[in-house]
Length: 327
Image (cartoon, rainbow, N blue to C red; front, side, top):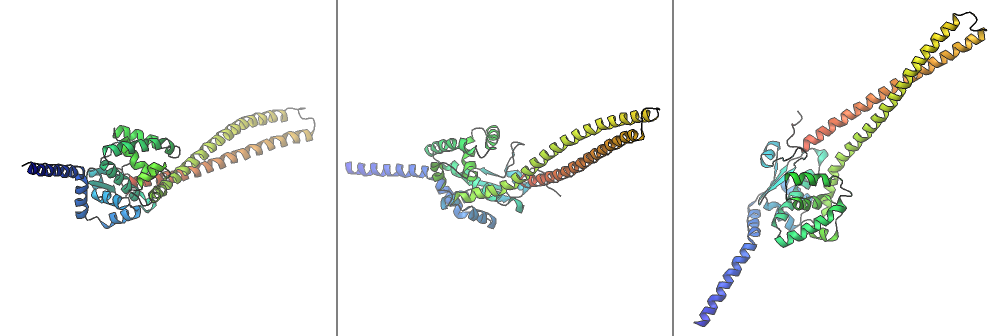
């Protein structure tokens, strides 16, 4: 009887252990089943290959059954929560990733970075409580250093705090992993479980960021030049107006002297005064032409800025699913 009880007890413990093991591996089992039955599109497969996920990263990506959506479908899946943000992808746990299908060749790399970003949301979702606490500390410790080169990160985090309260570390986990070229060694080691070479992803991010950075620099340069030209035009115009008033007074004074007997004692004195007036007139005309030249230059620069602004609007429309497409 006793031995039977021992056997029965051991068997019960075995069942409990198996049950506990099943609980802790439940999501992994579900993910494995989903991946085994999921048939990704050719484009999704290409994106996964280009990002160079590890086997674990690839499995987590495919476990969320990623799909590329056009504008209308994407907006049905992913809600834009702030006018200050552009949504390129979303993860709706536990098994759905949606990626906005940005096809403009100028923005090559957007889909790859979005895919990696959303995969890291899946990974974060699967972390144990203990591991999540450890990772949160790592990403928080890295933020201050990253912000030195990523000046817009603080602004983005404020938006996330407003639109997704409580998700700061989750978002940092995805942002740092896909956009920060240099990270502390321990955090870099952590990301190696998901990426064969994380720099591939950050290079994609740099690639399309540079497009926006270049046009932003062009805008800033043109605005600075326009401000400088406006100041020059205003200064020259003021000088021209003052000079014109003075010249009119001088001409009037000259004419009065010329019509008054004895004002000019000699012809040479008359000629000298007249020559002085003509020189002032010529100098004033030169200033008028200079003003006109600066105005022409200003208009040319403004036309350049208008063209850049059209380009920026077009680029923004390509990544903003909520914008009205250009016809």
